[in-house]
Amino acid sequence: MKPGKYKIGGQIILVPQEEIYPNPNQPRQRFDFDELEELAQSIRQNGILQPVSVRINDSGKYELVSGERRLRASRLVGMTYVPCVLVEADNKKSAVFALVENLQRTDLGFFEEALAIEKLLTEHGMTRDEICRMLGKSAPTVSNKLRLLRIPEEIRETIVKNNLTERHARALLKLTTQNQMTRAISIISEKRLNVTESERLIEHILNGDCKHKQPTVKLFKDVRIFVNTLNHAVDTMRRAGIEADSAKSETEEYIEYIVRIPKSGGCVIKTKKTSA
Image 1 (cartoon, helix red, strand yellow):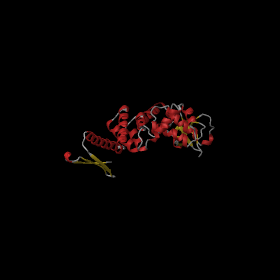
Image 2 (tube, helix red, strand yellow; image 1 turned 180 degrees about the vertical axis):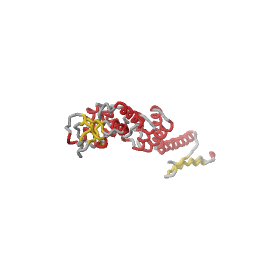
Image 3 (spheres, one colour; image 1 turned 90 degrees about the vertical axis):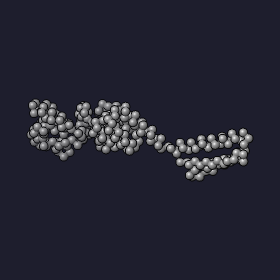
């Protein structure tokens, strides 16, 4: 059965399963074996109720457009020929068909969906408006999906492995560095935090890091308070009739403050304060 024998128009044809090439734009990267086995059992009993869709690609070969799970299950059964609907679709349409079919199933991963949308933009030259219309999604929804790809791949894998939700992933986007994300996802996964608990953790990480970055400023303010306190003490002694004297010097390492109290006061106070 050669592709050239058939007219494109939606008719059902039987194609040897080994002659059907995978769709390079298939968004689904993970397939649950138990689900495939269930589908294979149904195909054993009832056959394929809905044919897969194929097109003739640039190399003149049959290429899957949609129906990846049905094709895989058919191969598990050992079917020699697979019923197919031959459709006319270029690379862009094939990518959209594959994505739309998988979006109609609720178990398509949110990272898989985001990667598929990005591929429509970068490899097939579609605009965001076109994608929104074809997928039936709002512009903010598409933008939010794409933002998920800011999360490094190894952290995405941890999210998927631990069955965390898209809301968990969105919460991580508040963090500004990969180290922060790695620290957060490690705690979230280990303690099995829900979304609300994860958001509190992330706020704690952000606030903690901000405080850690500003110790010098805080210490500098404390030193100013310390010096002002000494000045006030010297002024108080002078108002009380004690001819107290003071001198202040400053280096890169410390501030030196000397208070001199004459004779009857009988002592000299020296204080050093190390600055940050």
